[in-house]
Image 1 (cartoon, one colour):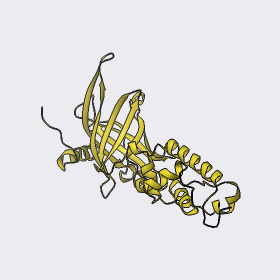
Image 2 (tube, helix red, strand yellow; image 1 turned 90 degrees about the vertical axis):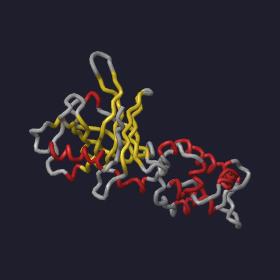
Image 3 (cartoon, rainbow, N blue to C red; image 1 turned 180 degrees about the vertical axis):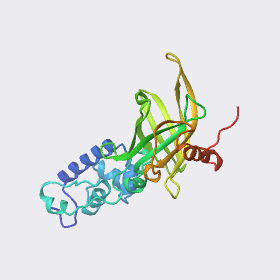
Image 4 (spheres, rainbow, N blue to C red; image 1 turned 135 degrees about the vertical axis):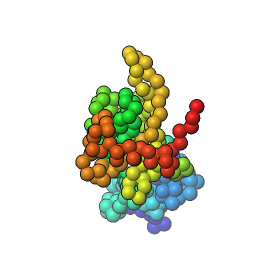
Length: 257
């Protein structure tokens, strides 16, 4: 039970502080981010987590809403049952932009992904990319599919920082990175930008390469075709038009050497 001034007991405060520290570590968020989501000052959060001030009921409820979890145990079960996760309570790590699930939900879906073919300068390479929210990682993640070269299928995290206004699809495999940088979606859902990766050559030869890339909501293409798309394919002109849009608008620039 809470005391008349709504301060929790020392034991409850220690248990809540421990749970919050675990949640911060698991979600890889900063104390500053949590304080902002809970509409608390960083000083207040530091004091209650450090045991220099007991938790009050009001502070605890704000933190429960920000984290979307119940922090109180035992005698406060009736109060715990009334706690609802706050909208946007699922927050990505600071390293990915500290975005909320709610704010990023418009990016979730299946996309037709287009880039120039690395093996045929006149062809377009097409495959699918799915972007979903991963509750365990507390972030958007992506995974490619229907690639003709399935051995090179990529998956990874999605960063969405407010500062640049761009979206980053990041693959990191044992320190080897591939990066896709695309614009925020247009009014019809397309995203345009640049892919930077490694081109596999003969034997073990790898060469850095960059190219235009486009993501189209797959539902906007009547009969999408995948793989290496040549001029004889009915979707060839549509695909080329979207790739040209990347530099013609421009969503990205390629400077001459």
